[in-house]
Length: 84
Image (tube, rainbow, N blue to C red; front, side):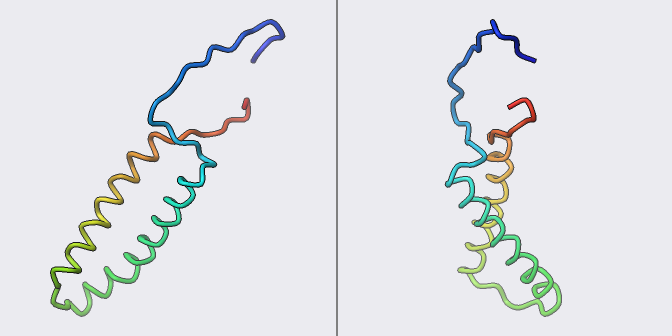
C-alpha cells in the first residue's frame, strides 16, 4: 500500500508486452484460430488417416512453433492487479 510521500521507482523493462496492446490481441486471435483448427483437424487425422502432403507438414510445423512462442509471449506479458 502506498503512502502520500512515497515515490515510485520506474525502470525500463525490455521485451515486455502490454496486456491491452493491439498486437497482443491479434496474437490471441491467431492462437484461437489455431486452436479451432486443431480441434477439428486432429480428430479428422486420427479417424481417416489421410496422406500428408509437404504443404500440410509445413503448416503443422508453423502451428507447433506458434504454440511454443505463445508460451514465451505469455511469460512476457504484463498483467493488472487490484492495486493498479
